[in-house]
Image 1: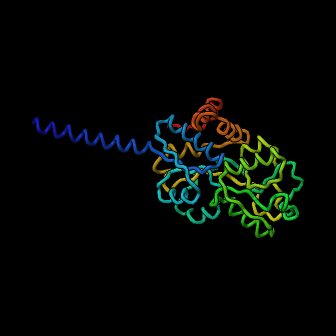
Image 2: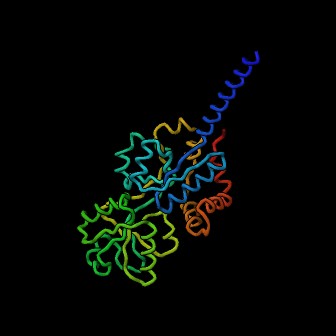
Image 3: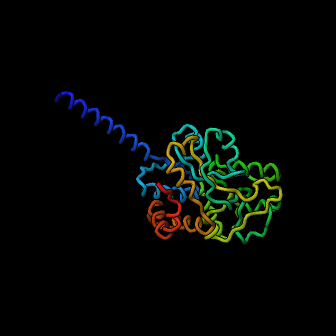
Length: 283
């Protein structure tokens, strides 16, 4: 009898251990993000909220191509910065059948070519006339970014005699700041929402051929089947929606912080607790 009891106890312990292991696995989640200000801010916001509900959150920083590939192979769970219908159309065409669109976070996103307000031109069509003032360069961001692919199309469609320079998003804003300090002419690949529009006086050049499209939406995307695997996290992510004012204040908080993005997101949550509480699904 003693041996039987010991065996039963060991079996129960094993079953309990397996159950706990499954529970722990269910409480793990990975969020992929690129080095873009809105994605960094929104991803760390989600990280803090999920951690407050017992999740072990892993943050994965990468360029777009590996992010989409990782999502499609379930190597990453969530990407909160998918611009549609124009900017990331090619990626969604390639990977969309293996992905699940969870939510629409923000509805007034826009991409285009951006110049300081003191630059006197108003349209992309005028760029060639002032090539020397712009040094024949458009300052871009990461090579795989959707806005870079769209800008290459703009170069062809408008017949622009310019070189599209590859850089990181932070390097682009640094170049912009230096040019503004010297009142030099500069044109960059830009987008809203972005904290630079709050810091500097900028304008998006008119795009009469609509190469960059009109207003876009920013979506949260997961691997297909994620919402069935983790209904609570999926519902939470689905509930996160931000207005112009809210996303602007969140991005500013993250950009200005002297500490970590997580700390900035946590402080923003405290200032917007009622809003955040409204996103939490009933268990």
